[in-house]
Image 1: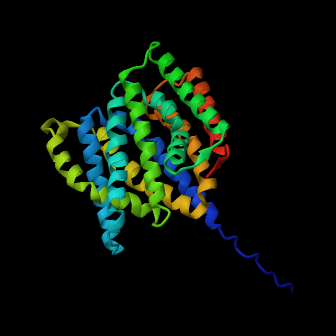
Image 2 (image 1 turned 90 degrees about the vertical axis):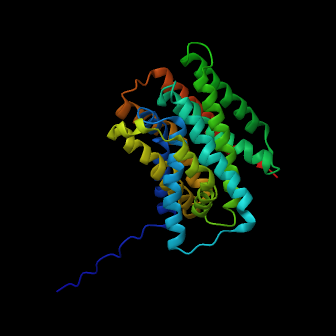
Length: 299
């Protein structure tokens, strides 16, 4: 009687888990603009900005307390700056933008985020990017501006200006938090940034509350909590842990898919029409961003 030996179970590598978590983070981030548009049907941009921060801060506080983490006082100023940019800057600018432009439009404009983040990293980090890097930066910006103008009646709308401010705020915030992540876990960076900004977010959330918000639809309420617990907490948690496990160079490439996630969610859940022109510009922006991120950068 032949004895059969079962093959050893295949173990999932640390890099594969990191890539999966990074992809999850990108999917969560991709739903941010559509969720913001839905939230605006029941809440004001100011309450969405500060209220979502208050929700995320509660989750961050519970996690830090459970793990008995202590505040890294030496990094407090940088953590607070990252909070101003990511917890307040991007949300408030994107909320005002979503009042006047479709989420799919915003998804294409914000597709340049990985490249603008690289530009800020080069400027702040004292790096010397190659000529190709800067050419891609200029071309990416030109594509986004051309799309914004052609999609808004041949002029830049107020919503586009808010999207550009949102992109700049997020890019600089990513660089600041990225530098902090060199000596502390990435998930701790966003958690402490949320905690240090609570003296602003919680009072401002109370101040911006209006009685009529109690009549918000279930869809708007769900979208609001998605922004707070999902986009601002779980998204950053999955993304930062994924970068640490799978490697920044590999996992960060997944961010190139974020625009297409936003386009898909906008079409499926908001019923927005995704034209061939929108897809073409999205593909062009992503191609330029991918090329720019591969360009040589020396110190």
